[in-house]
Image 1: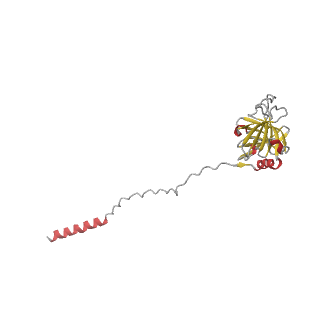
Image 2: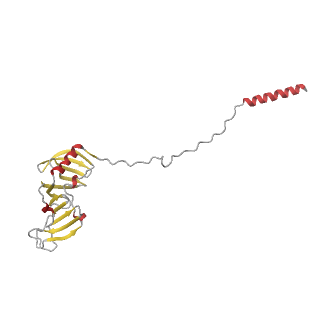
Image 3: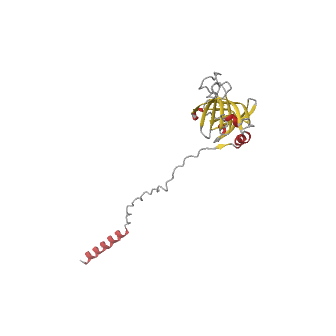
Length: 222
């Protein structure tokens, strides 16, 4: 009986030893919850900045128009005039142009030979002022948007991109060929204003330019 008890006790000790030596199984891990950035932390995509670059040499050339051209007269030919030229007088925000007249008679009440533009007021008016007008004076108010034609100075107003790509002689005057965000300009190297422009497959010409010869009486209806 004593032997059985001794064997039983030995088995109990051995079982306890085996259990205590068995490595414990790790508890199943719980995946950490995904942490999402708050709306304030989320990066907001920024729009790409518009490229704005006018080379220093071009900027210096275009600045000449501000100091050397107070007013200007020229003949203009473009998409609005067909194969003909309009006479333009520009002084500040006042503009007068004489449309080419295919028929040289001005003998009807609605006949006109001159358009006056006031940029500040946003107005356009037609007049008949030539000596041979049978009915002189104002004819009608015109649509500003339809009557307005970009002036030689408008073409160089505030380009955001411009670089010199060549040099050419136009009408016996030296010009720089300048590539801008508005088109190609051939800019007179003395006055800093274009003698020619190309944009959208169309050509614009400015000839017989006379700077600083326009009077107030030239651009204001009488």
